[in-house]
Length: 316
Ligand code: UDP
Ligand code: MG
Image 1: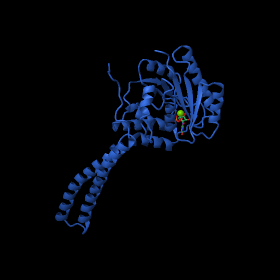
Image 2: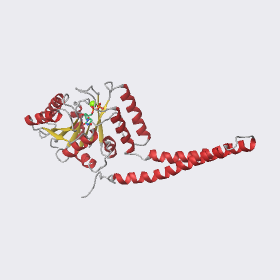
Image 3: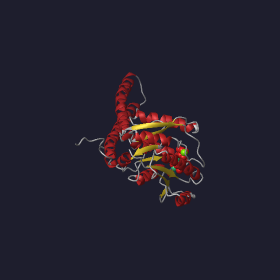
Image 4: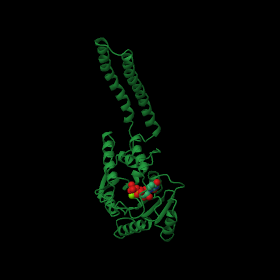
């Protein structure tokens, strides 16, 4: 096999402080792999500026002027990590044999790149970067991530625990990803659904090179909601189930209300209010649940996700 062309895709939002260190380390890693013949000399780094308001784009331009293997792409406005990463992957599609996405703060160890390439050469279409040690993340981040991935598993959704968006994707994996046209992106969820051969590389999560985290609590919450609502309509079905359970409870409640009514004195009006509150409540939830069933179907249709993607054909 000829040495593969590798593209390193780096999403950058206001990363002027981290970029020089980041580019230096990534360039060094690429050079080592090129010199040892593991990857093609045509391999490159693509820095994707997500509408930064600081000198991120100027910094990328300066590096590109002196080294054409450091390429750039700039969005007109801040579209968020998932969108800029998608833009970068679509840009390198057809220009490389595999792309590796890594954050500009290099919290994910660039030494994993070499191992990812090895596993790609051994036949993996996707190699997930998995964080072994997350001591550099806050207690809250670790705890919420753990609970969140447990919830996703509970809903029957695939995910690789402790994998964010640092991963290698083969040309084929990127092509398959491009068939997903949805707007509420949760890339790690889609990639896990592709069903291509996958492997993992484990490393310690490091502190940020420089600058501050761009993921506020609000953004994190938004991403986690997308991670569920973009993949599962089960929460809608839960409304219907709750309605049906309430109706069963309503039957038991009605028996109790009638026994009280005939058995001893109750305040006038109590019986009719109790009967109607329970009955109307459950009927309304069931009604909402039925609407939910239809909305769930519409939701699947509007996504227009690919129906299937071919793994292999035998054609001779
Ligand atoms: N990022 C981006 N657009 C955004 C927010 C973040 O491109 O709107 C990039 C950021 O520059 C970094 C990566 O996404 O390269 C991950 O962000 P960060 O390190 O701030 O998140 P954390 O690691 O704290 O979750
Ligand atoms: Mg980070």
